[in-house]
Every structure is written in C-alpha cells, then in structure tokens.
Amino acid sequence: RVLAVMGMVCAGFLAFILFTSGPFARTLPAFPVEGRDLNPLLQDPGLIFHPPLLYMGYVGFSVAFAFAIAALLSGRLDSAFTRFARPWTLAAWVFLTLGIVLGSAWAYYELGWGGWWFWDPVENASFMPWLAGTALLHSLAVTEQRAGFKAWTLLLSICAFSLCLLGTFLVRSGVLVSVHAFASDPARGMFILAFMVLVTGGSLLLFAVRGHRVRSRVNNALWSRESLLLGNNVLLMAA
Figure 1 (spheres, rainbow, N blue to C red):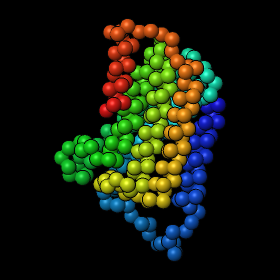
Figure 2 (figure 1 turned 90 degrees about the horizontal axis):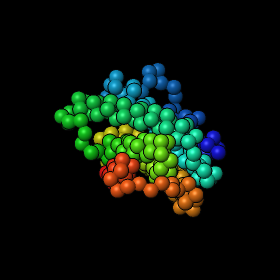
Figure 3 (figure 1 turned 180 degrees about the vertical axis):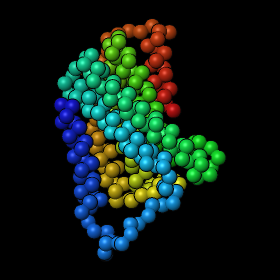
Figure 4 (figure 1 turned 60 degrees about the vertical axis):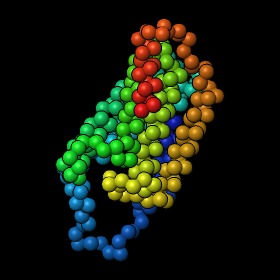
C-alpha cells in the first residue's frame, strides 16, 4: 500500500511534467553557441545546495504521507509504522532545516536585507511544512513509545505533505508576489493547485471516514508529558 500511494504521487508529478512543462518541447529557434546565463541573484555557491535540500525535504514528507494513507486504508497503526516512518520523517526534517538555513544565509548577504528572515511568502512556504514536520517528529515519538497520538500522527503526516504541495503552488503559480519567485507560471500553478486539492481533500476525507479505527485508547493526565507534547504540537500547527 505504501508503494502504491507513492506511485500515485509520482504519477501526479509526472503528469505535471508531461502536460504542462513539455520536457521535449523546443523553446529556442536554434541551438545557441553559448548557454543562457542564470539570473545574477542566483549565481551563488549556496544555491547549488539550497533548492536540492528543500526538494529532498519535500520528497521525504511524501514517504510519511504514504505510510499514513496506508495505515488508514489498512485500519492498523502499529510499531512497524513508526519504525519505518520515523527515519524518513527525521531525514526530511533535517534536509528541510538545512535548506532553510542556507536560503536564509543567501538572502542575508545577496538581497541586502540585513536580516535572516523577513516572512516573505516563499520563505514561509518552506517554513510551514517544517513546523508540521517538527510536530510530527514529537508525535511519532509518543506513538512509538506509548502507542498514543495515533490519529494525531496520521493527521500531521497528511498536513506536512499537503503544506509541501501548498508551498510548491505558491512558488510556481505567481499568486503571491515575492523576491524569491523566479519561475512563476499560472498554468503550471493551476495544475499544482488541482493536484493539491485532490491529494489533500482525498486524504482528509479518508481520515474522517477511517481515522477512528486507529485512534489511541490511552488516557493521559492533564500535566503528563504526553499532554504537554500535545499542547506543543497544537502550538506548532497554529503557528
């Protein structure tokens, strides 16, 4: 089931490449003698690593999403789920963290803002799944050790990947003005929006219908460690 869900996600992005990007289309009338140079703002060593790290973070959360959908379809969430999902989630979180740090450093000295973070729409697009991923890591720890927060873990897995899709849509569609937007296209943005609505809406509907089958039966005291972690997760998602 996990591989089937990941296959459907891959099929969606392959359709995006084939139908909106035209990888085999010829964009220039003739082969140039010299290649077309990058935007001067992008000619920076840090940009060699910044986009791939963000990409690996986004892709890593798709694995956690696939495990969550598989658990909802099977109606079972056991220790095997957390044993396999937690390393992927941690790796995605680390890659996303490194990508955000490199992007902040680039914005500091390249754009001349004199600061590391200015709540730009594109910056927030990568920060939102980072917050959801942080909450997911805490929730996975409770699920693995005490078999708690099962429904919360599944919901966070769905939210983390959905926020990755939302960030991709905001960056590629041009719907928000940002100094970080270098390749906006409304047509491609509409395709990503439709794909995001399909994935997010379908997974949330599945969670609403079958989430009760994997709900935890553990009762925690008000001031227990688990309750405080739950409050922390709610705070991260509200942010």
